Image (cartoon, rainbow, N blue to C red):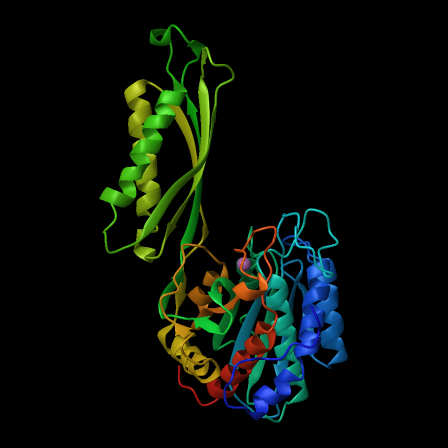
Length: 406
Ligand code: NI
């Protein structure tokens, strides 16, 4: 692929667009560089160094080692005004890349398989634009380069470290490149965008024995099978059909031989939902089903249940702001897609619990170029023309935010 990629959206030109279009070759260069040196959560050392070097070059104030490897850049315009934060995650995944590209990962078994390299490049792009055009916008922008989105989560420790204070942040926006949507499309909606993520691990303690003498045993495989079936009734019978939820058992391990009844079984799974009112309900129902079935068989159990991320809930006003910008920058028939909810999770949700904000999807797939593998796939890659579009959306949001009442 060449480095001279131009935007092929036929929309009205503007000063912002012209300025940012010039950044496109650098955006591609930064993204590819980041892509070559991916790092896992809380280990983003080369990544943070790369960001810090750029911010220093551009005369931007920043703080490093926020929640271990995070960076917060604070950029002041030449005019007083509100404080808007832009959040970009920068971690990669434990996947061996299978793409045959010049900018392929140089770190064995680690890959930017979700597009966070693109998020970081876009955040660097907006930092560059803001620092070089301090007269053209108002207020202050904080750029939050967050570690460990893929787990265990860097947003919460960054909030605890005070990233939303000093100066106090009025609102936050962030984007995820999204291969479920074609490039040139923006997925944005008020309210729930992404699901809460809860997790559980359970061990069942039965009584082992001979496969031909089940009456002497408490069969943990039979117990487990009943429990897995029982869990299916939670979504179908305890959750309103108007709400959406998922209960998935992803692992079930038991037994050592075909003629031995297993004394223990282990299972683990994940729970997803949008409605914050379901926060306690599903976990309680899971435990009640496990407890009831174990008691009926004279078995015991141990259950660990925890919430990883709450649901991503977009604030109406800030979403209206993002939507109005989206309508300006992308044209129909692709355009702005409101029905873009996913049961995937994101720790952007912690920021959105603290202050008004909006998280949105920026379509990044290009089927014609073979850039449409799903996120977390060893061949995931995206259409890099999206990079300057992302910067432009942020720049226009910042411009509009100056006169915007939350
Ligand atoms: Ni991601």
